[in-house]
Structure formats: C-alpha cells, structure tokens
Amino acid sequence: MGPEELLAYDREHIWHPYAPMPATTPVHPVVAAEGVRLTLADGRELIDGMSSWWAAIHGYAHPVLDAAITRQLGAMAHVMFGGLTHPPAVRLAELLVDCTPDPLTKVFFADSGSVSVEVAIKMALQYQRSRGRTDKTRLCTVRGGYHGDTFGAMAVCDPVGGMHHLFTDLLPAHVFAPMPPATYEPAYAAELESLVAAHAHELAAIIVEPVVQGAGGMRFHDPAYVRLLRELADRHDVLLILDEIATGFGRTGTLFACERAGISPDIMCVGKALTGGYLTMAATLCTDRVARGIGDGEAGVLMHGPTYMANPLACAVATASIGLLRERDWRAEVAGIEKLLTAGLEPARGMAGVSDVRVLGAIGVIELTDPVDVGTVQDAVMAEGVWLRPFRNLIYTMPPYVCAPDDVDRITRAMLAGARAAA
Ligand code: PLP
Image (cartoon, rainbow, N blue to C red; front, side, top):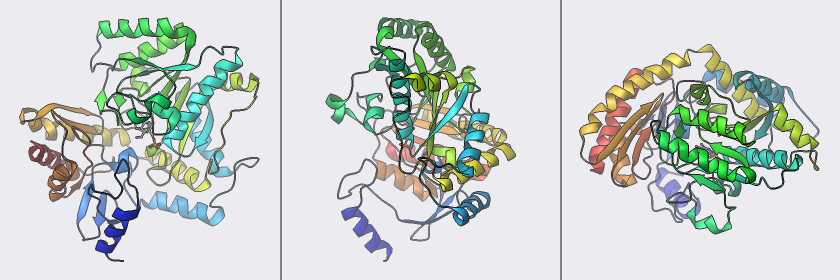
C-alpha cells in the first residue's frame, strides 16, 4: 500500500484522537522512529517535540529498551494476572515503590492513564466506604484539570470549555475549585480552604495534577498550592490523589512534581513515560493505610482487574526505562533543555498574538490570544523539520530528554515559526 492509498483508507475508516470521521484534519503517515526523529512516508525526517505526548523520554528505538522487550518476548509475552504473578511485575513494583514518595507501597498496574485514574477514584471511594463514611462520595478537583477520557476520569476534568462537556449530564457532580493561579495568591488559598471545609463531610478525595495542568491548558502553578491541598486533606479527613501521569519521571526537573511541594499523596497515578513510550501501561500507587482500609471493607478486595494487567512486556520495558533514568544524568538533561527553551522562546514574548510564554523543566509553551488553525501552524512547524501538535491556542513542546542542544534550538525556532504563521 503506497502512502496515498494508506492515507485514503485511514481517512475513511480509522478514528484519530478527537477527530471527525471521515477525517478532515491533517494526518501524516509515519514509517519509522529512531532517536528523537520520526521518518515520514515521503522521506522527511522530523524532530519529535512531543515525545509522543510526554511518553518517549529516551527517544525511539533505544537499544536498551528494545533489548528489554526482546528478552521478555523470549520468555513470555503475556499471561493473566488473576492468580498468577511474574518476575517482570515484581521487579517493576519494587522499582516504583522505591522511586515514588515513601508512604506509597502498594501498586496497581493499569493499562492506561485514564484507567489508573479510575482505579484511584475507586480506591478513595472504597476506602471511605469501608470506614463507614458512605457520605464521602464526591471528589474535589480544580478547574483547568485533565485526568483522562473514561467516565470516572471525565467527571473530575474541567467541564467548561473542556473536552467532555457533551457528557456533563451523565457524570457525577464533583466539587470544582477555581483554577490555581500561576503564583501564590492568599485570596485563592483562602477560597480553596473554605471550599474544602464546606464540602469536607462529603469529600472522599481531592484530585489534582501537581504543578502542571497538562491537556487542560499547559498551565503551571505554585507548588505551594499542592502543599496547601495536602494540609487541607489532612485537616478534613480527605485523601489526596496526585495525577503524575504527565509530570512523572522527571519532566518538570524533579522525578515527580510533588517533590517540588515537599509532600506525598495518599494515592498517585503514573503513566505515559512509565514505559519510555513503548507500551500502554500505567500504575496507581497507594499507602498501606489506604490499602488496609480497602481490605477491611465489605468487599475486602479492590474492585478492578483488567485483562492486560501487569503485561510482562510492558513491565520489562518500564523497568528498563526507569533503569535508564537512574543511569543517566536526566536532571542535567532536563535542566539543559529548560535553559535552551527559555532562551529560544524568549523572542515570542514580543510577537503579535502571543499572550504568554512559559517554560518549566522540559516543557515549553507559547500561548496565543486566539485558537490556532492546527494545519497552518503544523505546516509552518514541519517546514522547520519539527513535529508538534498545537492545541487550541497553544503551541507547546515536551521533547525527549535526549534531545541534543541543536535539536532543542530547532524546536524553538519551529515554535516561533508556528506562532508567526498563526498570527
Ligand atoms: N492524566 C493526565 C494528567 C494526562 O495528561 C493524561 C493524558 O494526557 C491522562 C491522565 C490520561 O492518560 P491516558 O491518555 O493514558 O489515558
């Protein structure tokens, strides 16, 4: 099948994320990926500024990750996890317990970020129920948040202008705090405190993306808010769930974003970069206290169990990916990217139509005053030899940590070209 035929079939028959059917938005056939570069069917090479949506932190076709999967493939590709266990799952669980904040000691392997959020919500609800707190059935979440596309996860996403407003009527009504401002504002903190206090009797948990709101708007907020949420959760007998699916494994410059706040959650979701972008896997971790509470409940078990739970290939590659992070000086890599993004995006500040430029760790964002035409911006970016996926009024990058300085420079030049094209 040639590229034209392939595209024609794709357009008619295959859904893409948030896309119409048949597809009218641009889709580009990609045939290979190596290092930080994607090769398109027409031979063009593009530097991947997206890490395949936060995931491919070590780049593509990494020999260590390839070898880990190949080795595991020789032993066992998959086996059910009900009543069986295996070395790849145990090794990965050990690593996760070791590298996440101390009180998190229990691991549930989920098959996507959204499912790990579903599991986190179930953990919180089952925990409260088992303590006789059947009144604690709601979650407190913040506007601008994004936690996934499944129904439980959608219910804690921002419904206004968000991706899920079509389903609002079908979703449980949770408690929404206003969007956290970028810097610490006592008035916002006070509002948060009174909201949590007012609803404490019915709150099972607070859920938040620490420090970076991703798909909801690529916004950053002061870690002091995360610290405040921890305090409020403790004060009001509510659990704290941190969604580190996007921020986990070094993206913001610390291994987990909650380290910036110096706190640890009761429940934490990780995904995306967990497998270095190789396979779909996520995990929900919780404390002994939460796990014991669930065990003491009427069910005595956590009510979740996906078919592909703890897939051995995914466990093996995730273990290798965390191993790579431990071997390499990823902190220096992310700090170097942060410096280059900061300098490279600076000229955007004065550009027409640009309302904000922000950088944190290996994340760079140009925010425009108006929504962009994805095709127009993408054409301008691709002409610079870079792959990005603009979204609403945002042109943003989260490149692989192994990007060379020249590659990061190319990405920032392409973002500026995209912003010029959007103006
Ligand atoms: N939570 C956050 C913070 C995310 O950024 C995402 C995905 O973008 C999700 C949850 C959902 O993860 P997945 O797409 O793997 O279901």
